[in-house]
Image 1 (cartoon, rainbow, N blue to C red):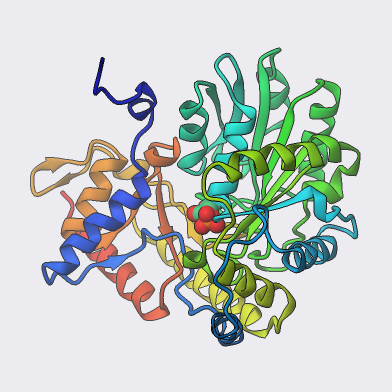
Image 2: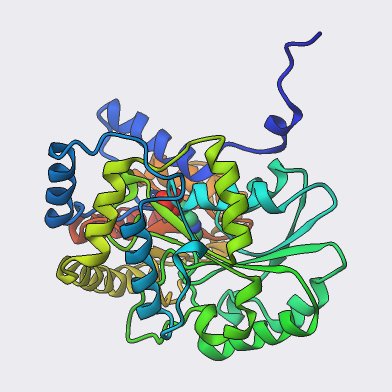
Length: 401
Ligand SMILES: Cc1ncc(COP(=O)(O)O)c(C=O)c1O
């Protein structure tokens, strides 16, 4: 007999990014004027036409279970949109499953694929949930640190050296959370060549930020670059970031039918279908007017220019220009060892705490993404807040001893 929790609860940590936004929210609730650069979501409203379709769906009585992996017209809209974005290469609707956000899609995938003894290659800096989702199922995340000098991109020789008989999957996120770095066509091709030569394992391409690239960056999907790997390629995507629909919780997986079938089985025993109304909203986003999306992307592009240059000009900060997403990822190693009010800034965690207390700016320490010595700042906030935040950080740095 036992009332103990399963050991898997201890195997993982609470999401560090959520912890920062919670602390910032606590301070705000106490009346402290905190600028949050912590959140990973667009600050725009979901486009009005999407909201309208969702309201109409409610009025029509869209209030019942749907098929577990999503309604057919949504699957068809995802198929068509994916074909447009991925070099004309299409998936069948039997190769698509809609889940409760891209995170849920990745979680289902982890449940389907990973077990003790498996290794999952994850280039770092990486999104917080990848390693923990691997650990939850008893497998081992094999974190491969990438270098800022390589643009935070995994080198083909590093990938080749990391592959073993136990390799189950490689998780690639482009553009990346947290660095905003994106792989060029040639860089993806070089990784695909290694994956091809080295035998069988899954390639999981998280392309959730695929529509958010700037300065004319030529964004390509792994599917388009290496179509011959389609039977080993699993693409995760969704409406959260592109359409500013984080709260609607709709994400999806494009994968070989056998993977979709296995995920469907798991999802059928947990959430069943994603919320019916949200499925209609996602369909409206995919099929409807893209002007609001373009306006959002233009706003991100303008903010990125100001914010990245601003951070880079602050003493102790060095900030690479990211190709995509909405994050700046400055190197703050030069601040380590400096003192604030007599207390040494020993690492990026200490720097984040200091920025929250002294500059009233919430940022996420790079350690949360397996990248000590860096910070992640989301620029999905207004230009006024970005400028005010830069000013506060600059002033706090000037007060350092
Ligand atoms: C790289 C990456 N993948 C997946 C997700 C999850 O997206 P969703 O909100 O659709 O679950 C996020 C959200 O932060 C992300 O940054």
